[in-house]
Image (cartoon, rainbow, N blue to C red; front, side, top):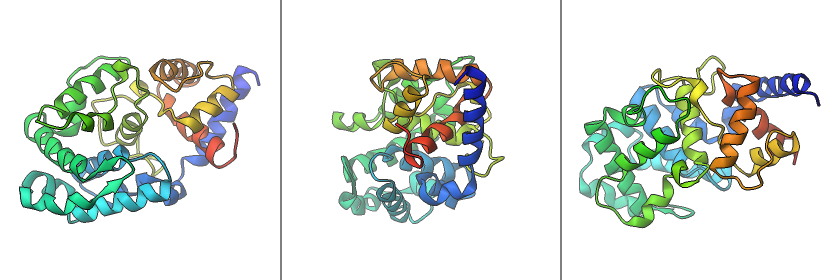
Length: 255
């Protein structure tokens, strides 16, 4: 396909898959259970943090996370006692366990107490065209408390070469507008133009098939290459094409 034809094709697919029925089979349905900004962003961050593997398993365990917090995430984060975390010990999603979950709760309280919440922690650097450094700074804040080093693997760092798929997905949820009823558009201090595509096996394979990505590894360099391609199609909202790439891979079997 020529460039304009490919752009039209991707615009059509993005519009096709960015629809409310998308929520029925996607982990983003979990933060959609809430109305308050802080509840939404905490639920979104926690569910995004376990978003790998089978999507039904992610949704099931995401709902269990909310239940363990009494379906009141922000209040639980800010007012929990150590004894309230005891039931977390049995939680497990793949390599994310109860110890990890308990630390995340404590770290989130730190962010809301010290950094004006998740949005504040992610926006300490301004006027950036990309969010790689913002994610790196956020990660340093998140791990200020004493913790087991192994927990760090659950928060990726693009500065160290990671594609940071789950964090980029979370940021898409928070930043892109809610006109289609899928993303939330809660954060106004970050522009959609700064976002990077959440790169995984599906979106990476489709991007290569369409000639948008040449790099074979799904790492930060691949994210930057794909960002460049997508920003040529829409510099103001490049990550809308995440829907197209994901849908073509998962629902249409393009490889």
